Amino acid sequence: MAFGYCYLGLLVAPGEVGNKAALHLATMLFVFLGSGLFVRYFNDFCDIDQDRKAGKQNIARGDHSAIRWLKLSGYTAIIPVALWFSAAPFPLYLLMGVQHLLYLLYSIPPIRLKEKGWPGLVCDAAYGHAVPAAVGFAFGYTAGAKSSPESLWIHIAFAALSQFALGIINILYHQIEDHPKDKKAGVLTWVALKTPATALKIGFNRYAPLALASLGGFYLYWGINGFPVLALALLLTLFLISAAWFSNTANPPARHSPRLLALNELTEIWAPLYTITALVFQDHRFIYLLLLHTFMFYRIIFPFVFYYFRRLGSGLQWLSGQLVYFYYHKLLALYARLKKRFFS
Image 1 (tube, rainbow, N blue to C red):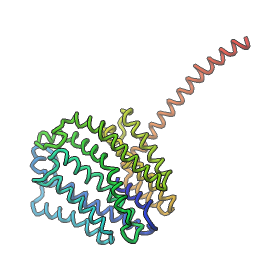
Image 2 (tube, one colour):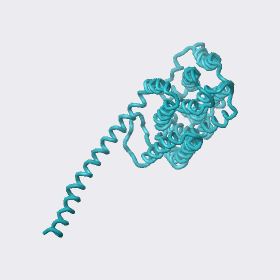
Image 3 (tube, one colour):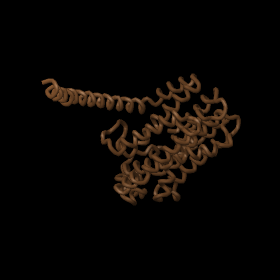
């Protein structure tokens, strides 16, 4: 998802991005690698006792105390070192600092927002979706600037807001999935307080429309500001996915609950591909980025591509059957009646 926002940042960046695009993309990859390793290990580090009670796998449980702190320090160090080597602008240090602070607030006792109900949902949505979207856009947008553009904060605020409701939906899904084990371990998440059925209902009735509106508004904003074709493609895909959200019960690949996580498909699969294609039209050298992105994420891209090809094949078979039925049962019958009436 963050890469899709980075590509959009490159597309709308002030000035020529040139070779800095590759540098910023590589830096972002290392930064998110360090951030991802940290949060994965830190969450397990703070949940050792609860995971033992729930029978969950915990990657920190078997490590010695010194090894735990060494890993946490090393994963954290990757972030500022990568930013320093690439001479990243100050806003990226600040955004990644906010991201790290949110990790701490979510998991570490006694604050531990994870078990504070609604604040836990907000915190997870922020570090899981909103801030990564802002960071991704900032990496792309600053690649074309000699200094931090004045409009940077406005753009990254829009990027963060476009993902916030979707972040709420995603943490609801994960808390619903983890509810049996969390209940066994005594972990009081928001879903544990509200019950999974209530959480699911709130997700669909409240946050699904909000996610649709925020994403649609974000894409419409870029359509008005010089990228109508890209915005039209994104809005059309958003409409089709949201229509399928409420009507399709078939399970697309890699989704246990496709209706709840349907919009992830747009931000993870189609939006990045559409945006890179727009970049290729802007500068043909970005064709290498399109190939690299497809290779890096082929495990999540191709299952959806094949899924829709199968759906298209089924649709064509249905259409063919309807045409045959119309020809033999409607058109020929009408011809026979007309012939009998006028030529008998």
